[in-house]
Length: 281
Picture 1 (cartoon, rainbow, N blue to C red):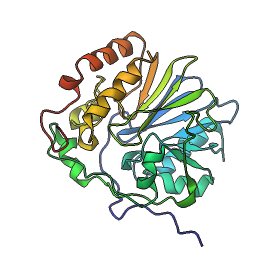
Picture 2: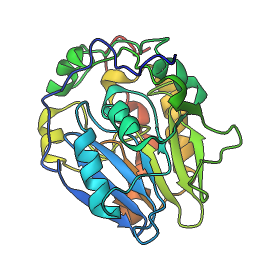
Picture 3: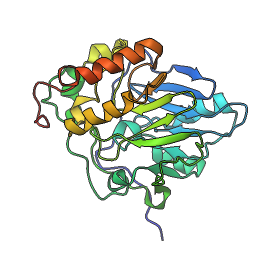
Picture 4: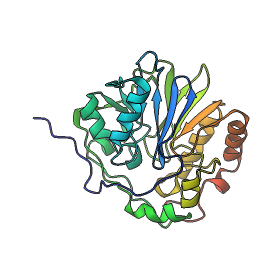
């Protein structure tokens, strides 16, 4: 008998929000970004075809909101072909088990994330001592134990293709998490960056709440390998994306995205890397 899916014992609702919570943005006709509390998920697919994929699964206790948004965009009882995870941190898998149970669809992640999604390994503990504001200090309460998805989780194909997302390729962008990936579509240079970089200073409660747009590195309190994080940003900047959806903050596009990403690459150590913290070299 298969073992039941389960969250870690530290799974809980996190009382944090932003002014964008409950709002969605159609970035492109087939690319929809929606904010639950302080994190984004994406619906990739044209609403007219009902052929779509969910990227990431929000904060803890967010499954009902994700289902509601999905049905509003794609119709009653609609379901994605699959769920693709940029990584397995708590704010990207918060509604995952309920969504799997409701939709009966497969989940895909990088093979290096599988230990955190099959109950085998906890993420490193969040660092509440890292340079930053109130969200950084709150991170001591953020879940880091693995969840158990059993045979519902599958490794992404090694050739860079993404199941049910034929125009996208996945790119390994570690640093924030060992198996972190970003998704890129060459034909229109659309990027789903996950937390490889974000468009809000995620460590500061005021900026998270107001969603003041400014490019930043990955959230500091959960990033453990800053050298890899820098290489990942360089890799994404080299793609010259025209639009980027990030895990936190509002989407960015055009010249502002280009100049901001270039600045982040050139000044990564000053902009992204904290002055102090237990994961800083």
